[in-house]
Amino acid sequence: MKFTFSRHIGKFVFDRRLVLLLVLAGLIVAGRSWLAGHPEHDPWAPLDLNDPKGWATQQKILALREDVPACRATLERSGVAFRTLEPVGEGECRREDRTQLSAYPLSPDTPATTCPVAIAMELWKRDTLDPVAQEIFGSRVARIEHLGAYSCRRMYGSDEGPWSEHATANALDIAGFVLEDGTRISVLSDWPGEGDKQRFLREVRDGACGAFSTVLSPDYNAAHADHFHFDMDSRWVSVCR
Image 1 (cartoon, rainbow, N blue to C red):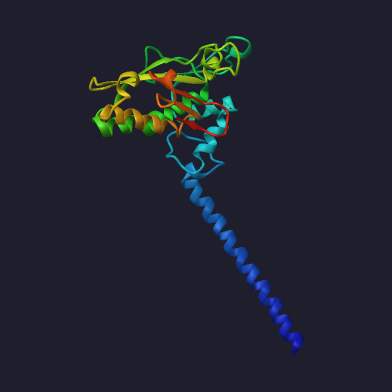
Image 2 (cartoon, rainbow, N blue to C red):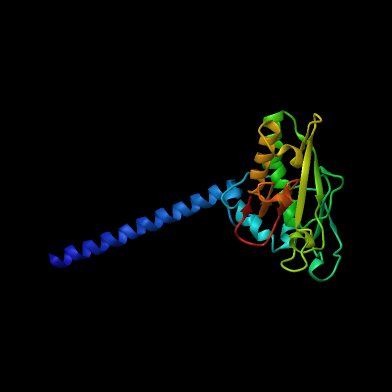
C-alpha cells in the first residue's frame, strides 16, 4: 500500500511539471506572436522610426550610436531621405560618419551630422516638435533655425579638456523656430517669462530629452542663453537641463 501511494505521488509530480511546461510553452508562443505585432517592444526587431515608441525603442537607439551601418539601415527602413558624405578631417576632429538629412526643415542649411543625431532629430520632430506646435499654436513647424553642427574645438572653446561633441558633428545647436503661420519663436528672446512661446520652448526642450543623450538649455548656464544644445554622447546616462 505504501509503495502504491508513493508511486502515485511521483506520477502526480510528473504530471504537474508537464502541465507547467505546456503552460510555459504556450506563454512563449503567445509572447512571440504578440511581439510580432508590436515590434516597438521587441528588442530583437530592427528599429523602424515609423513604429510608435515602445519598451525597446530607447535601447535600440542607444545601440545605433556604435553602429553606423545599422543606423543608416534604420533611416532607409524608415523611409527617411538622406545622403552619406565622404569622411573628412583628421585627429580628434575627423568625421567618419557624415549623414545629411535631405528633407529636414533646418535653416539656413542642413548640415551633415552623425547618423545617431539624424535619428534623434527625426524622432524629436515627429514625437515632440510638430505635436507641441500643433497643440499650442495650431500650426506646424516650417523652419528650425540652427547655429551649426560641426566645430573643431574642445568643450567651451578651452585650450585643454575634453573635446566637444561638435568636433565630430555629433551635436546640433538650435536657436529658434518659425511656424507655417509665420510665428517666430527665439530661444534668446522667448525663453524668459510665461506664455505660449515660453511653454512651447520648454516642452520641446523636455521632449528632446527622450531622443538625445544631452540636452542643454538656458536653464543650464549663460553660454546656452541663445540656443538648445543637442548631442548623442556615447554615455549611457542622459543629461537634460
